[in-house]
Image (tube, rainbow, N blue to C red; front, side, top):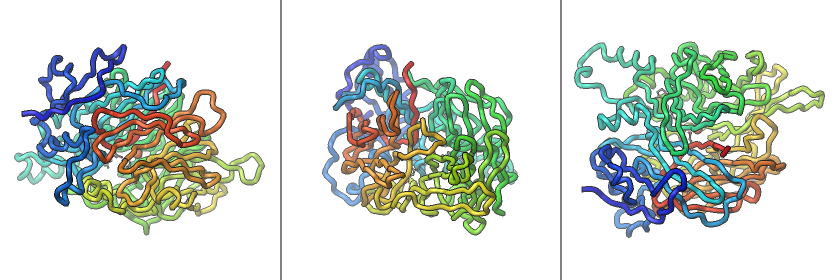
Length: 568
Ligand SMILES: CC(=O)/C=C/C=C(C)/C=C/C1=C(C)CCCC1(C)C
Ligand SMILES: CC(/C=C/C=O)=C\C=C\C=O
Ligand SMILES: [Fe+2]
């Protein structure tokens, strides 16, 4: 028996890609062309649990049925509900007017499938990568989503169980290994060789200077190349440099038209390699190495970092990788990490040119996933940088945010005001050999609802003095950022865009070609709605007012980061 949802409103065809709306059932390997041509979504029982199937009905853009029980009242928001089909493509009906200069594709990555059979994943970051695209073409939007064909996802489909280590999930040992006293050693080897690690590249998607589009996460054994038109997995991106012996890298490389910078933490001799890759190459070169200053066993977690024109900033957070926690089958509240505030918090600054460390300062304890931007400032006016300013989405040195992203918490606390406070944390790092740096609040956090994450800036201001931050903020009460914000960090003013019951993903800024103002452009976000629907929203980068929206014929879950692929 299969549940059916009618995909409404999407009958128009994409002139060069589609002859009709294309829908493919998740894991329905027998789905034939005939089935694909029907504008209906078949939900297969072979892979999805019954719970998911009932959620599928909620996922359609129909009103939520009458609430009867407490559990119903706390109905799972579509933001935390797995996608119901492996792929879909079609044209969206646009309300409002898309600027004629906006031609290209916004591609968003994120975990969108959180169960295999009857097994529900634990954490937001565990889900299988799901790409969503919005192709802007002369005022029209052609859209779609698709599960990324990583080895981890393909193995899960085939064996109907978890086969690789995800962020918080570890595959169960096989029966034969259960009683084997040496199996623990085998597991350690498989972990450190990367064999058991996931390649589920569910975090970021970047467009390299040479045009290749790559999905990635924090495990670096492999990243995955994708095409956006049609949306599909092309194959593996393998680095050609031997640096993959190290299990992990930052999930957010910094990419320009000519190069890519990233950090590779060293779990054995705590420190970080700073590496650079030329556009067109698969070979990263080590520019320099920095040793951790704290006495802890593991390096600080680096989800992201920052660059200025001449320097790379390497954060050393007190939230550190823990080899002990890495080896545990069941995660702690801090997952693979541990909190070591007594060992100090640091920021290191490396010259891009020489790889030398030009500053290494102790700073107040901090917790951040995302750096916003950094720049050099000449405070004496003699033409030489004296200080580096670096901004990040800072969670008030409170590690609870990591466990708040547990799916059960996100699903069950909807409507409760339980989101821990966050702010724009501004580091001041003197370049005169001082021992200490400062960390202050850039803009009063109350102005953006004490939530701050999933940020973007005008990419033309990367590493330069800048003024505007776009990010997710909050209209309290909430258990997750539920508003889009534009923060003017110079005037310390905040604009908020919010509608009741929404969970928007990262507001992504696209500059208008030829613009002379930093905020001249549009902001794109994909919004999951309380009634189970979802839509793409376009805000004016300057006024922060809505200029257009386009509804999807079904609900999309929350997603993480995106990139812009211009049309040539
Ligand atoms: C989605 C996101 O923001 C972060 C994802 C992080 C992942 C998938 C991390 C995975 C890891 C393992 C599978 C084992 C080694 C440690 C660690 C990098 C945390
Ligand atoms: C979604 C998120 C934090 C939200 C907190 O308010 C962090 C995501 C990190 C990974 O990319
Ligand atoms: Fe991230």
